[in-house]
Image: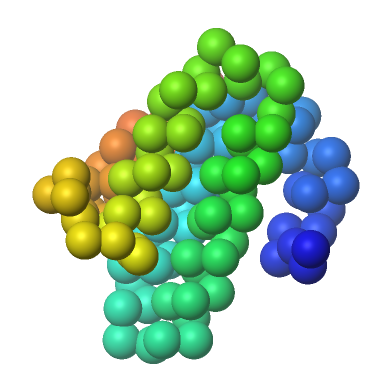
Length: 108
């Protein structure tokens, strides 16, 4: 598999806190929203977001949060590829992730 986030996929991602991981996923969600008129950028941001979500799922430290991140993946994929059965938007996900980014910045 070809990773967009090469250094993260080689182990650096697993050094991040859960909050930091979700903040980074949120950055990709934000990029997807901003790229809505540029299909190439949109597609790249979608792949990067999925990659980060999947890396978070693989993180052995996340066993207590696995249901949450799996649900995020399910909702995200439903928005992008599905029929939006959850009636959720990328803006909703962006708001969800925003608070992780804010909290991460406040803790720095």
